[in-house]
Amino acid sequence: MSFSDPIADMLTRVRNANKARKESVDIPASKLKLELARVMKEQGFVKTFKALDDKKQGIIRIFLKYTSEGKPVIVGLKRVSKPGLRKYSSIAKIPRVYQGIGVAVLSTSKGIMTDEEARKANIGGEVLCYIW
Image (cartoon, rainbow, N blue to C red; front, side, top):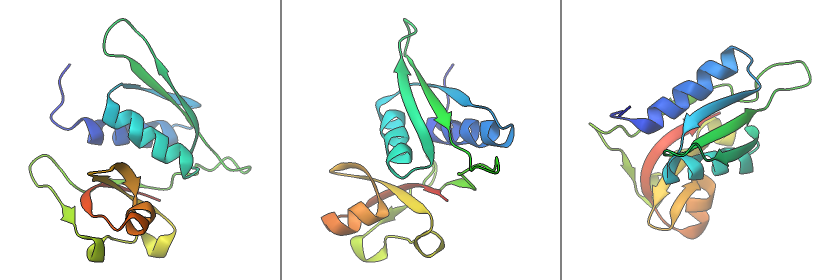
């Protein structure tokens, strides 16, 4: 099945699984989605993820994380740059999500990274999404 915006599809699947209090969610794999899952794990929004081989394009299984009270760690996900309207940011204008509580995920010439990593590397790029 082909999607016009696979990143938005990934974020929607994670958002829906979070609201349904699922333990994990399966997403069709791609290199960009694997990097996005890696950033989510490094920032502590998900427990872990696994790349599974299904003899086709592959599957990413993301294991969601909840607090001790059972509330989801991921409060919100927002797609910023869309296929019809790309949003690019220079180093001086990299957005802060909720004064640093959340993260902005950027696609840069050095790979996928958070807003904080991009500031340290002194590099701008396409703002893919916000996670808080």
